[in-house]
Length: 308
Image (cartoon, rainbow, N blue to C red):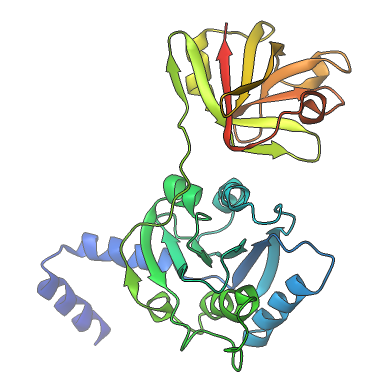
């Protein structure tokens, strides 16, 4: 009987058997996998993160709960966007992420779930948080959360903790397959609120890029300049790189660093240029903080110019 139904599906669709099978495999590959990963700007000083996880476990105790970070600087939507794209590609297809950096909580900004072309789900306010995952992982579909159906019971009078009442609850229902993606809410156009930033480029013998984030623990400065773009400078390992850093129109740093593979190639306290774990050009100091020493920070207003 199943075979008969499948053959009928093939005949009615007009697609070949191989195309139908690929479509079915694609749907299966996007299936939720009981993994739920949290991110926020809440910090861990109070019970906010624990409350979100408690709501999730109340939906299903079979969920596996993990964290990206809860140390996003308060209200820093750009950094929330970066930490997601730094992390998400390494998680299995079907993983559901909750990201709550929501200075507009309770306002008219939409609450959405993005399904990327890679098969990952992101539950978050549509306030710019999805900028980089949408760009780098692709938009398969966007749905607005129907808060009539997908909101924690008896929470309608709470206006300032959607992370607990809407996002954690909806994400847990989705990750545990309590609901399907279609049941999240109405489908939206395949677009999201995006934070503007300048894309890296090579021109006039120089590479220009931005400084989206810091390697906070060590004070290293991470750019969005990849190796392919950098290599157009023709600079080889062991040679010097001229570096200029700006915040808006203001020049913050100008100097020369040595291009190395790893910090151990220079003496302690030496400035270096290297490629980080994401294979983007970065600035650092062996056993010290480049950011702290030179007052170089990050965000979509920070830019960098490299030359030979």
